[in-house]
Length: 339
Image (tube, rainbow, N blue to C red):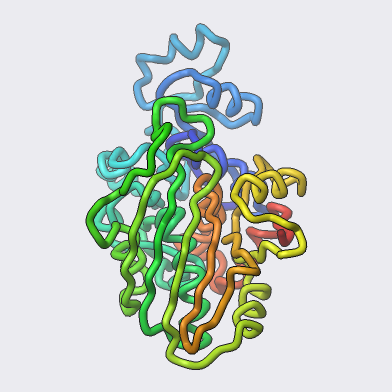
């Protein structure tokens, strides 16, 4: 069994922890928190051993009835690999600790590519992660872009990509962020960071991205145009999407035309936390104009990187050599049924 530690038990960390616990070849050795809060109580209810960075704060946990197993250093000593799900830029500060402990580490997209020197996507570069001590799972938006771009590049070749990211203002549980009544260009300059981030995984793809933030918490929406090198029909594109294990078609027949309706649909399917792990590509939006492909896709910011972390664990440990096998194992363990 691969022994996994989760450093940072928040929006992503708690999802990755549950995904790890569901895998037949992995086990959680511990999760970490900096303070006792609702997530700490969830960790307790799940039976995950809880560790803290500053052991002097143990009394605060004891006071509310949450037992502390030890320090983060002690957690890392038990692990083969750690998922760093701490807030952006904190992971970089944790790197010397991981190096000292000799533990493999997976960072999230809030960190810079240079922290790990390798950015991961299951579809694109699974085998390149073999044997690495550090890797970075790219952000939710970059993950969604890499999946669809790589699939089209394999089939037809991609000449160039243009994408507009309409981003959610905050996660549903966040109460300190906005905007409340505005569309915010983020950034005003072009390109946004998403295009260069895609190129850390797919360096040969010419891509320009633009981004804005809107007052919603549900999901991001991408408006994508792609110039293909070969002629394809709309039916060809739909077939590739249908067969892809991490892309799903939002069918016209469902009547879904918004992220709110899509989130409700996923909830009614019984998904854990109503998570959409795949790209939600709107069937009716897929269009070919000559060699130009157009589509809308919804990206659930809390969820799509979760499955990528699981595959990254197997790749870095080297326990599963075939990316298709790992993806299938991950999906099946989570009860990943098509939308």
